[in-house]
Image (cartoon, rainbow, N blue to C red; front, side, top):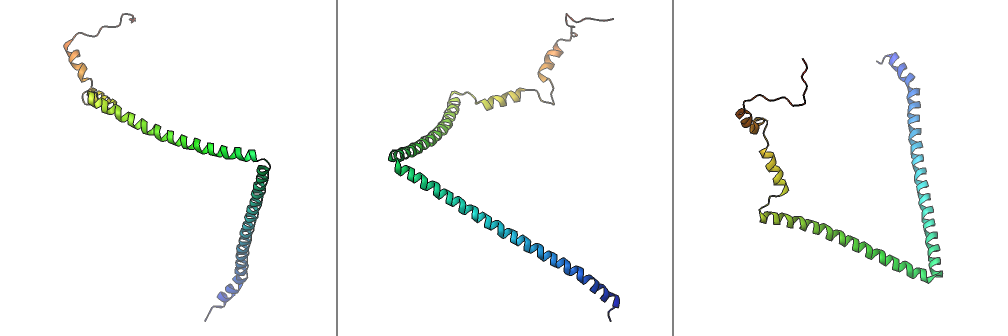
Length: 160
């Protein structure tokens, strides 16, 4: 059989568990209602924006109908803007293409003339520099040939 104390514990915990579950359900419902309110607000704002856009478009159309010269000027201005955009894109394409061809022409001319490219010049300089294994290899021959001790500078003062 079941112990009487376990049954008492179960009945003692029931009210607090019920309160906890009711609180969780209430939180869930509150979040759900807040989300619905937010959606309604967004829809209302979108409708207001659409109405304002319609009103401004109608006002612009009425203004243009009242002044046909303004309509002609706007049409011409739009056409000019389009041509300027086309010209700008064409010049960008041409300038980027011409820069590439100039660089290629320079490298071809250098190769034909036998002149190394700037990158190979730098590599040559690096290879002629003394390495870590042979420090001052180019200077060893001159220092061993002249066995005289180094002379102090003329303007150095000696203190005794």
